[in-house]
Length: 443
Image (tube, rainbow, N blue to C red; front, side, top):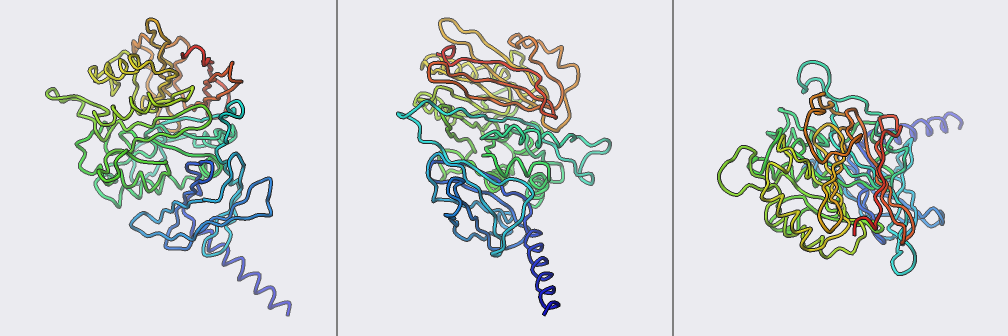
């Protein structure tokens, strides 16, 4: 009898381990609304997957998602909808693969959006931001020292317990062996998403993403890239944003918006509609007319105190270098003029791309200043010392940082004293710089 029991235990442990081995990456928390959330995960083969979840204040009432299964066509990725939520509650969840619970060594949780308007002050919350994540893969990397390092930065971000993480471009770095085929593109996403250091962060934090050139195609790629519909499909398969572009039938672009508390975030696409850097004739654009008009309309409609515009490249840097918006002066001028003419309040630009961090402030007559906070890099190579010579006339003294870093925006205070606190941290989570922007100064 004892031998039979021991054999049963061995078989049970072996079976449970086998289910764990099917989990390729994730789980990752995607968007969370008042009554619905999405959990993303990837398996390495066809399997039945579901999520069990419960509110922390009522752990005996367990809910289950529908059972999901996917295919190689989508890289065995799953977007699992949880549709039995109540507003303003913290939930814990478990992953079940082939009806067996997956044991994970870190917290798996999320919070539904709070119903606060007309009832109380906006909730305090924190958003983490970062760009330029390079994860080494020696056989496909360029010769020499690996371009990526200090992956522990993601554990430092997780330790800050942000409600939201915004990946602001260059999240995967497609290589020469990747961007010419679907096989290569999905391999790159799978490799990057499977890095062990990012798992605790994505499992308990809402994750939203934009793309920049290295997620979209080759370095400095633009709307002419022949495989952009393939990289767009991969982006949708591996992220869990609320939407991708405003016309699903046209299937163009990955721009979108979401809100949390008294902030609305506008996630822009600076690649799909972009004209080449070196093209001389014709209209030169980064956003394109359709996306630009959508953005101005959405900003004008928004009632949020803070309107955070997230885009891959720098918007306010005065230097027309690299891929800064100053290389596209006509469209940049139109965007900034529309914000001014429509009296749009509370705007902050978030950008990445440059492999250094800086804060730019552009004064405007008879209204508030515009700000552009560039936060980069997370794990990729750091910009050379030449960046200190770049004459960005709008750079705030003391804000230039040339090392691996990440940022947080904390939305704090009562209705009358609402503010954003912007903070930069090093890889260990030690503060390097901060700035407070008051709501009243953005009116």
